[in-house]
Length: 636
Image 1 (cartoon, rainbow, N blue to C red):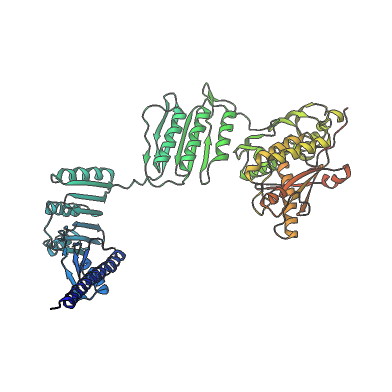
Image 2 (cartoon, rainbow, N blue to C red):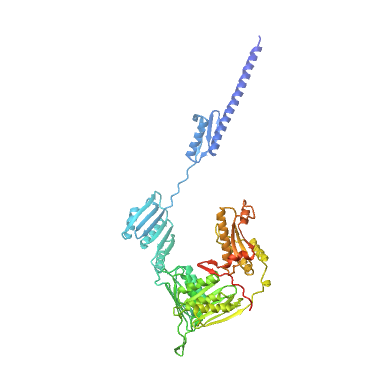
């Protein structure tokens, strides 16, 4: 019997079955891996790192704890995009939700003359109708506006106690804001006076329940002081206040410091209040106390904007006029000063009154001080304008006193004296009703004749003039100073080190350039006879015509700045060149900066002739013609 084919057939079936099983297992594994990878990719993209997935044949199992039901649903939806939802086995759960915290209950109660407003969140158990009715009874006919919201949660511990205290406080405070929470009540209110403020604070603190935190902010308006008064005295008993008023803490501190500088000691007080006549009250008081200390004794009284200064009997007329003049000339606007020097008595008889005087001093550095009496404000303004034109606005210090009862022609005598003082290099002048005394230094041999003619032509031949002039011969031409080349080189060296800067697109010199102008002025004083040109240059930005005008204006501004420093500029001319003479590439910022410049150039004698006529000088609030330099006179 032959069994060979049968065995072979059986073996073939077994082998085929094994191969099919292996192939089926491999295919199932590959399907599971592919499904799991696709599902995991979707979850990673969605950021659902809480989900755990596994594949079991065609089924996809989901495990893990979802933060919420919504997260769980979103994951199931994403997996449904990978496999059919019927193949998803959901074995996940949802995290237990945390308990919702109760809200923070708070109540804001606002009360003014129009009524009461309620704002905030209160427990649902709060009887709002009773609350509105209770507050309405105390509102004095005003309306109670209920803008409250409620939440159905248990009242926090201490809420009822805090609410009742807040309501009682609101009833007692007609202008207030009260904030109520379970363990805190904050009260902001306005009292009628400082004493009322103290009473309210004491009463509220006394009635505050235990364990309740009370925050108080009670303010009281400052009193209205009418008139706004300050009185300060310096006498045999020392320096002290009779009355003191200030509008702010800062003003109070300034006034008390000024009082201590004037000699006041010990504890000082100054009432804060409303009704100040000017925001410059503290500044005016500082000046007044300083003036009283300057004369050594007397009293000063401020009543609103009126100031009365009464000097002690032992104060001299000269000191009185000097101090009062300084105070009167520098007081802030609005304030007016009345000053009085009592008659001096000798054995019960009034002594002779010191005659009125005016003084002016010109120092070698060009500074001018004007002191003494003038008849009215117009005369003082004219005096200031003339002195500013003659000596420069910044060089003049004005400390004159208005005194109406002056001899006739007083203003003409004062103005003529200032004109004469301007012809000297340094000196002083004293003007009295009977005589004018002028003394000083000059390099003009004919100054005495010129000044005498000036006084006679202005005041008449009967004017009593006393001149004491000290003539110093000017240096010889060889020793007069550096050469023209040296002058120009020194001036341009200053400009190389520190340029003169202007406001953008303007011929106005900046304040930062003042030291440079001062340095140039010092050199030009040694080179006043050297003919020079001040040239202005610009970069190429803008039109040629505009740059030309700008450069001319800037060159002229330098001349004016030198004149204001009392430098003679008769030999100096100004010229604008615009963008026509560049020294660097206008294509770069550095080049344009270099091209924007002022330069000095040496001229021959004829080139500066055009500048020897009157030269217009301008400064703050003044416009005047300043004469060209006086010719050097031969030594007699």
